[in-house]
Length: 72
Image 1: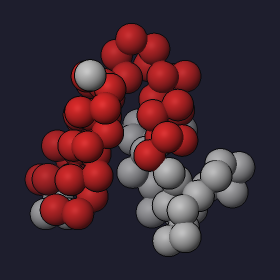
Image 2 (image 1 turned 180 degrees about the horizontal axis):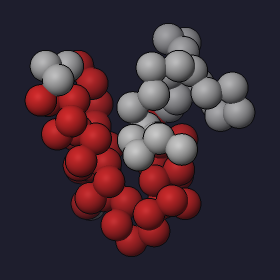
Image 3 (image 1 turned 120 degrees about the vertical axis):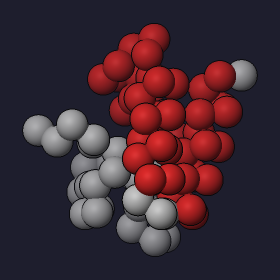
């Protein structure tokens, strides 16, 4: 299993998706809670940092917004 389940380039068939073929933010947050429990915010932050270092600004901003939602 991938160590970064939220950064998959392939659409996941078993989860609700937005019009662009990506899992919705609510789905990603729910999966993070299921996999990492109380450390879900840390997992989302890690994915955001990974996107930032890969130069994927749009994806970084998406994870940053999810991180804000988890921290509030």
